[in-house]
Amino acid sequence: MSDHILEISRLSKSFGSNTVLKDISLNVDKGDVISIIGASGSGKSTLLRCINLLETPDSGEIRFNGVNMLSRGTAAPRYRAQVGMVFQSFNLFNNMTVLENCMVGQRRVLGRNRADAKTHAMQYLEKVGMAPYVNAKPRQISGGQKQRVAIARAMAMDPKVLLFDEPTSALDPEMVGEVLNVMQNLAEGGMTMLVVTHEMSFARDVSTRAVYMCDGVILEQGAPAELFSNPKQPRTQEFLRRILARQM
Image 1 (tube, rainbow, N blue to C red):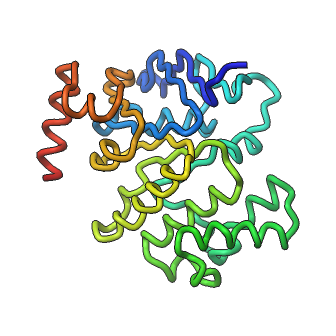
Image 2: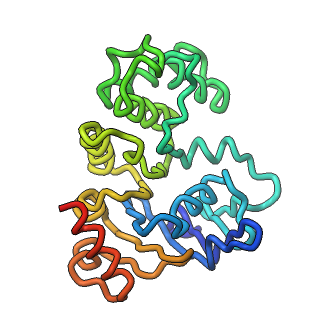
């Protein structure tokens, strides 16, 4: 069996005549925190949605613990419990309380009884600072709080990998820090994470690897300190110059 927890091999995806991913290969080891950066439209979110099987790739392989998840008979809900996803728009159930949002997947997918699901949900709601809001509905809490609930919901499934699709992009600026702090704590605790982000400080300071995507390909990747201080590709240099100037 491979040492890689996730192996993405030669992944391609088109929507009609628009090729969004072109022959993407990426290996993920346990404990990796990989930040995927690049301009809008470069294929970053589509890559995460393919890894999570929310989109079906046209070709390639996605191996999780050595097993190709694109083979026939793959149980997508079970796989998504192991490779969880946190969305930019939270995707909470508005008719459920914070606690119910964190229990429903455990009960439906993992088959946990109500008491165990509640205990597990509370463990992670406490970890992200949302235990006081267990009876609130999503409309009663802020965007930053919603995203922390979404992270707790994903963690309550005991995933091996967490995917974050621009988790701060829908937040007011003052709420970004509270979500990034939760993500940094997860990273420091050893959680394996792939993060599509425009937060360059997180990509530079928290990640173990940074990946720059452009026009549907991985143009450059490496240790964040090296990629940010000495990018090799002209398009990487231009992207970082432009976005870092904007965030100063």
